[in-house]
Structures are given as structure tokens and as C-alpha cells.
Image 1: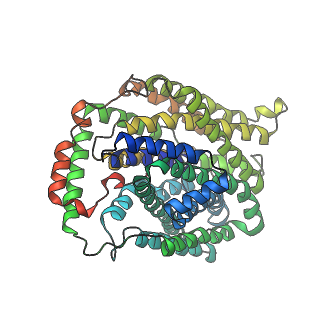
Image 2: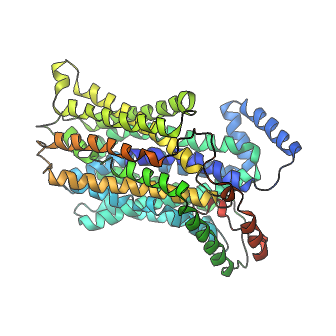
Length: 520
């Protein structure tokens, strides 16, 4: 939620649905009879015809109302609404309160996203390390307290040292990452218990997040104009309070006398399987491309934000205008999903990624048009072009991200699908982190400052060129279409020995390798 890049924030929403599907597939290793499958199918069709209110009531009755409350609180309010507001508020906090240069703000943005890069660690902890007999509740409590303390520190200290400010923002980011991965585990668990409702639960997660983000961006500018960025950051402690409430009311089974010694054996076994898989050319080659494609797409959004709000060189957009631009951008992201789902999902990986990467570089030229004010010569207002720019960029970014999600899901070996998918998402997020730091360095070298934007055009041009450089490594991506199997047969069927070893340990302990690390 806090200080993540636009692409990475939109990515989390897609990862939620994809990882839940992967986790469900892994949990589905329990054999389902044809009669059970038909019953689940018919039941799912019946639920799909319910009105929205009855649909919510049905989910609350079948899964327990505390679960529905938890999903809405974490996905909708904490990650969706709060994440959108935080993105705008923290930009203004760095600019107006800390008065840092855009290059520094860009680097800080990358640093603050580290909790999402190491998100597999949070998933590992919540899955294999219960506290006082509970796997989920203690981590919701940790998340809530961390978020409340971090946001109040930022809000109440007007002259907070920049190091402590950065630590507080990192704490807020970790708070949301921990809550996210914990509720993911709850979703995976309920999907296993109620397979006919798996799609409904994913719809609830996606719907909550999308509505929350759209609403958050819509009101972010108004809130900052009314109470300032620090006041808004103080309000962001409310989502963390809701996470605390989730911890108190969430229905969870107590685990007495947990055998911690067996956790290490499970972890060691999963780690060995992941390392063996990463050494396979069919896996590491696409992973390398995914990392490079994100890392070389230099993120200079802080430079653009400072220019957007500058009274002398830029268009001097107000807080309300900035929030509206981002809200329309989120609509463009949703359009990208619809376009992919209805038109592009059956195209080969290599061809689709080629055009997405190329269009990403071309679309970036809209920033050049805006910075050179060429739109004014055509009678096109700055605001209108900025809205188009944000919408097109978000749409293309989503189209690029969707096949990478599918590609990642097909690189996961049998037996540790959820864990390995989370690892791949961490690699992608590390690419985004590299992109943010590289963008900050670029802004610094070109002397783009708080008030000096003469070389901003050069930063944009270099970024656009770098966006198409990964095309030279496109040969690392498989030629096959998105419905093909990518892993060798021995990796797809090679979980028999693993499962046999797990049975020797003690099946009653229920260590969830499915979502060892749900979400990245």
C-alpha cells in the first residue's frame, strides 16, 4: 500500500487472483470424485445468479461473516482505499514536508517497497510459525500495530528526521504486506473448504480492491487540500485499526502443542525443490527476462510529479487534479484487463510481450509532448493530455503484466506451486525496485531538482529508450501460446517422491506449502 510504484500496485491486485488459483490447484491434489465436481459446478452456477446483497449474505453464511469482513478490510480498505490515498499523500509529504529532491524521493520510494520484495518471508512465517497456537491472528495484530504506530509518527511529528520518516513509511508498507499475505492464507484455506465458492471469493477480493483504489484516488486530492499530507497520513491509521479488529474477530482454530521441529524439515524440502527448479533453463530464462524488463523500465514518476505541481515550469496541477488523474488511470488499468481477457489471452507469449514492451516505450512519448508543451500548440489542455497519458500507460502496463502472471504460473513445479509463484513475484518486484533506484540515479545525474526541470525531457527520452531494450532478450521467453505447458514432464509429475516424504513426517500438522508465501 505505502509507496509502491503504479505498476507494482496494480500488479498486487492481479497476483491476488492468480495466486489463489495456484494455491487452490495445489490444494486440489486431494482427489475429487466426478459427483463432487458436478455438485460443486452446479452450486457455483446457482451462486452466480444471486443479487449483490444476497451474494454477500451467502458468502458470510458459508465462510463466516468475519472472513468477509477481513477481506473487505484488508483488500478494499487497507490495500485499495488506503493504498491509493497513500500514494498521493506520500508524494506530497516528500515534496512539501521533507522538501527532498525528486531523485531522492524516487530512491526512497524503492526503499519503502522492500517489504513487498521480501513478502515470501511474511508468508513463510504466517504459514509455518504459529504464535500461541494461532497462525493468522498474531500477524494481523502485528500488522495493525505496525501500521498505526508508523502513520501516527508521520502525522504528529512536523520536523521528523528524514531517516525516521523513511523507517515509518517502510513500517507502513510492511504493515500492509503482512496483512495482505495473512488474508491470502485465509482465502486459500476457505477455498479448500468451499471449492464451489473459490471463484466468488476471488471476485470479492478483486471487487473490494478495485472499488477501494478508485474511491481512494478520487478523494485523495480533496483530503490533502483540506488537511494536508500529514493529516491524511494520520487518517491512514484507521485502516490499520480495522486490521486489528479483523485480528480480534476472525474465526480461527487453535493449534495446541505445535511441533516446531518439523517446520524446518518442510522448509528445507521446499527450498531444495525451488533451487532445483530455478536451475532449469525453462525456468531461469523467462525469470531473467521478467527481471530485466522491469529493471530497465526506469521509474521517474517522482520527477514527473514534481513537474506536474510546479508553478513556474510545470502545469501547476492542484491536489484535486492529481488525485483525479490517478483515478482515471486506474480505470485505464481495468480497461487493460478487459482487453486482455477478451482479445489477447490466446496470443503467444513472445508476440504479445513484444508489442506490449514496444508500445510501452512509444506511449512514454506522451510525457515528452507534455513537457515540451506541444499540446498547447494544438489547443489541447495539459490536464486532458495528462489524463490520457496516465490512462494509456496504466492500460499498457496491465496488458504487459497479465501474460507475465500467466507465464509465472506455468513455471511452478508440482507440489510447491504457491510458494514458487510467490518467489517469482518477488523477482519481479525486485525488478521494480531496481527500476525505482535507477530512475532516481538518472534524475540525479541530469540535475532534475525541486525547481529545475530543464533536463526532465532527457530523463523521459532515456526511460523510453530503455523500455524497448529488453526486446533484445525476448528470445528467453518461450514461443508457445499461453495455454501450453512449459515445464518438463518430470517437474510436473515429480511431486510423488516429495509427497511420500511429507507423509512420513506427519500429515496431521497441516503445514500449508500451498500458500507458504501467498502473494508478492
